[in-house]
Length: 112
Image 1 (cartoon, rainbow, N blue to C red):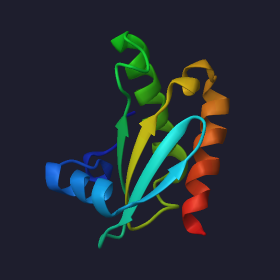
Image 2: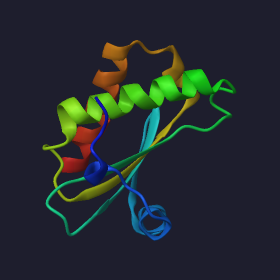
Image 3: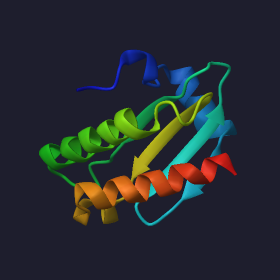
Image 4: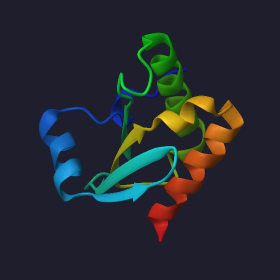
């Protein structure tokens, strides 16, 4: 399954707002930027640079995994945020369960 369109963060102005005004959570595997929105649901964007992996197959695999984790576990837990998840190269070595655990742990820090 894919992440429904209404939960995707799109649009240059909205993304720039998260980067300029948003807060940052930094970990070994991700950098998560977030900014409150006026909606009753959260929107997500996953960024993975070609510096992380030059192979698009690997980048897309990580991107799909993160979107699936968000779809299954996080969509209803974080109402009202725009989130940009930037993937770091250390996350390439993680299995799905480890990636899920690390992402959920970092996203739970937003609630505090």
